Image (cartoon, rainbow, N blue to C red; front, top):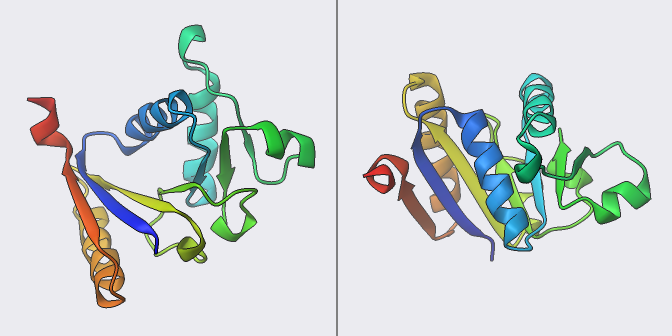
Length: 144
């Protein structure tokens, strides 16, 4: 069964996603990031503009097969387009289709965007009602 965790109180979800992707890559975990097109486009630009020592090899899900095979981070509108099923980072407001095929799912929740927080509560209830065990990570308490 997919391990699900919610990372609450992210001051900036996109900055947090970049840090999370860097940590996943350094751990040798392949990551698929899903969300709306505008968020993925902004995240793509941010990943390309990281400091050289923090560079994250990544591609979009419509890249060629070889690039998809070797990229540790893939950006996809649809999680079902994944070249792997290791870890899924959801940057969208809905439960990602096909999340159950991944070993791990991570949901990132804004510290200040109330609509995002309401959506996260809805997704939490969705997963819990289907019997998934959910781990909670409060990013504010980790900053102390």
